[in-house]
Length: 278
Image 1 (cartoon, rainbow, N blue to C red):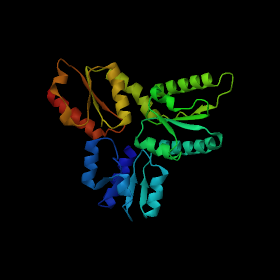
Image 2 (image 1 turned 180 degrees about the vertical axis):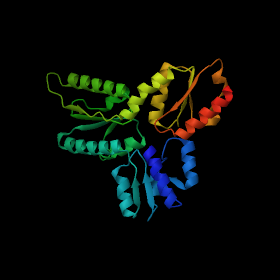
Image 3 (image 1 turned 90 degrees about the vertical axis):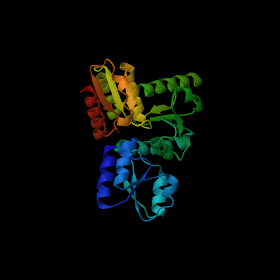
Image 4 (image 1 turned 45 degrees about the vertical axis):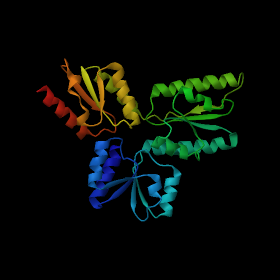
């Protein structure tokens, strides 16, 4: 996401206006800052009405239909998709082609409706099954082959649990038979490794201020990781949300954030807290 912001800033130095398909990052203050520089956020319906312009694709990636629309409307796409996401799209596309003659299923562990998941699902012509938790496993036909993938920002522990339960159910439905079940660990280690580091960080302070937009998938995962080791972890998206009462009897305060949280915002919030301490 940092790369997508850098690309947007570079383009806006050359052109007064740049369209971006969806929020470039799940942080309102950062989006507003870029809007002031000339970034225009559009949705997919608005994309269809544009012609002969530049449009930025954010880190989450896009389904094939977006590229087809751009070709029809002579739109130059500036693709800032995360390389890990792009690779996963290709892997799912190949898996879907393999599953077609086998009557198999593509299963994606992720959040239904999330931009990255929409792009991944698009590689299966919209036929992939999206499961957000073990409660959604009933959507799978365990008598048929399964290829399992994960949204890059999901938790490793959750993915392993899903793997175990799918394998267990397929073995139960196909007793004595070899099951056809394969999975691809596509979880971004920048997020999963950050989880371990943030838990250690959060445990060392009386109060932790976690800075993230509430629409950020990895932000919510990492926030709850901090909360699990420090119940005085507070979620904010801008300096105005900081509550003085949180710091009663606190001697130390830590400020951290999601992978998509800009450093300038965390520093601004930390500076405000230092003033309170002074």
